[in-house]
Image (cartoon, rainbow, N blue to C red; front, top):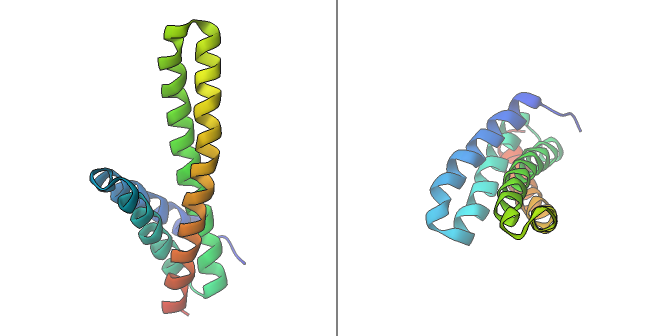
Length: 120
């Protein structure tokens, strides 16, 4: 499996754009963003294995980005509870973010495998 960073980057950007519009459809929109972004990354990478791999990486990068932003926001909001509240708030949100990253990666890998299948 070869990592095509161009495909990963474009897939990530597609996930962000579709994800922004997906905010109006909370669960379906985010899953759709992962599938569409993974499909694009997989199609650009070519092949089922490469597509799944590059879709997985694109989904993981987007999940990590969302997790970091959510942890920072949770930490800032947690500062209302004092310094300890900020640390605990940010850490709790970050752990939820790890779960989100795994979920983003799984559907992106599925989308990537499908995209790679269409560009063999």
